[in-house]
Image 1 (spheres, rainbow, N blue to C red):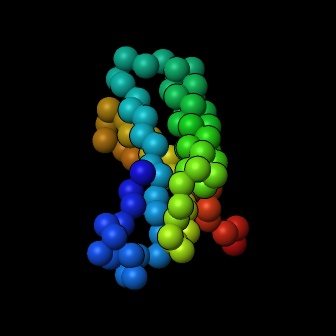
Image 2 (image 1 turned 30 degrees about the horizontal axis):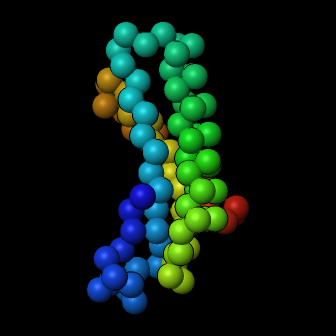
Length: 85
């Protein structure tokens, strides 16, 4: 959870939840797919928990899933709190 310091509450519009998963070189394609599903599900679950149990002090809560591979590729998936365009 990335949340603004109270001194900056007036300047920050969002709080972020970032869930990370690392795909190792030794992971099979099936393991990589499973990790991808897990990270998305965890980001959604944490979003619901933080939205329900913690004050946001007027800021919007957003949830991201990051998947990092052994080849240094990064995939960012917007999970929750983003408007659909």
